[in-house]
Length: 96
Image (cartoon, rainbow, N blue to C red):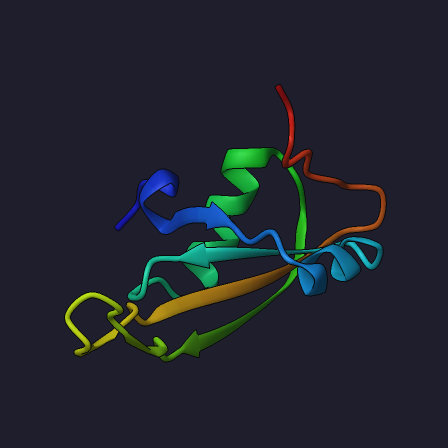
């Protein structure tokens, strides 16, 4: 898995991730099999920034009730990466 567009799936936009932007940390959903080194290389290649630290976490998908059929289903499990950039580097997530 060497392509950065296969490793980085999407950025996470939430209140917690917005609070981390002030510290220079960005949160992404990444491929389940990607390790920290691959994530670091993909972020640096895709956005042209220097990565200082990568933290990863696996999140289990929620169990949700289907309103129409009244059966239980699950959302998919995801892997997230919290990437801390070097001082002065930023990623513009909302460029047009």
